[in-house]
Image (cartoon, rainbow, N blue to C red; front, side, top):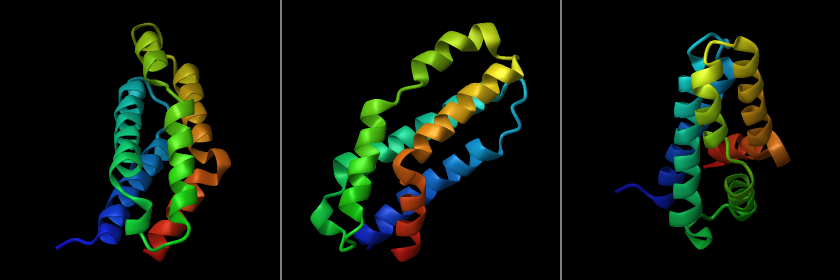
Length: 124
C-alpha cells in the first residue's frame, strides 16, 4: 500500500520531470505542442495535489506553504489559451516559442515554487 507521502513524492517528481523537460527544450519549430503538453501535465499534477491531498496527511511542515504556492500558480497563471491562439500563427517562430516557454518557466519559479518542490521531494 502506498502512503500519502509516497503518493505526494511521486506526483511532485512527475511535476519536476515536466518542468525539467520545459527547461531543456531547444525552442525549435514544433516545440509549442511539447510546451503545451508539459504545461497541461504540470497543471494536472498541481490540481491533484491541491484538491486531493490533505495537509494533515503529510507530516512535513513545509507542505502547507507549498500547497498555498501551488494554488497561487493555478489561480494566477494560465497559458493554454495563449498557446492555442499563437499555435496556428507562430508555431515555427522560434523567438515566440522561446518567449512563451521562458514565461511559463518564470511563472513556475515565482515565489521559489519549484525550489520548494525539489526540497520537499528530497525530504519525503
